Length: 214
Image (cartoon, rainbow, N blue to C red; front, side, top):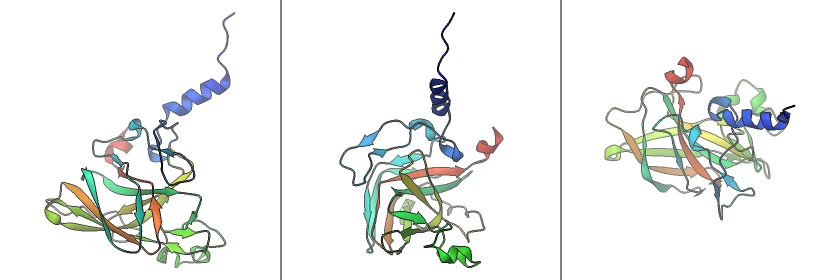
C-alpha cells in the first residue's frame, strides 16, 4: 500500500507555491544579511515576488536622521507608467505600531481627523510619531516629492513592516503620473521627524492592470 504524504508537508508545499505580492504568503528565500542592525535576521523578498521588470529590492540599510541625506541607487529605479509604483521603506516591526491601527496610543485614529497623522509610525517606547520626508531624484535632476501612503505587514517576513512612499493628491485619490521625461530615479533624499532605521528598500509596481486581469 503506497505511503501517504503527511498533511504538514502538503501544507508547506502549498505555502511555497503562493506569492507574497498582493496579500499572498510565500516562504521567503533565506537571503540573510550579515551584520544587519535589526533584532532578527534579515530576509529579503524572493525573486519570484518581483512580478514586473521594474520591481527592485535595494539591499541597503539606511539610518534616517532629522537631517536631509542623499541616497544614491547603484541601479536606477525604473518607472512603469501602467501601474502605481511605491517605494517601500522596510523597518523592523517590533519598535513601532502603525498609526492606522486602533490602539490606545492612537486616540486620533478613532476620530474623523485620523488622516492627519495616518500612514506614519508611532514609536512604542515614547509614543513619538515617526514620519519620513522623501524626494526622488529623476533624470536630469528632476525632483518628485513622495509621502507615506500606507503600511503592509507582514510582508514576506513577519518581523518587518513596510511604509510605502508615493506621489498622491490625498489619501483618497490615486497617485498622479510621474512627470513626463522621467524614466528612472537615480537617488533619493530623505529625513525623518525622528531617527529610524530602514533595513532595505523595495521599489514595486503595487497596482497594475495585469494583476487584475489574471
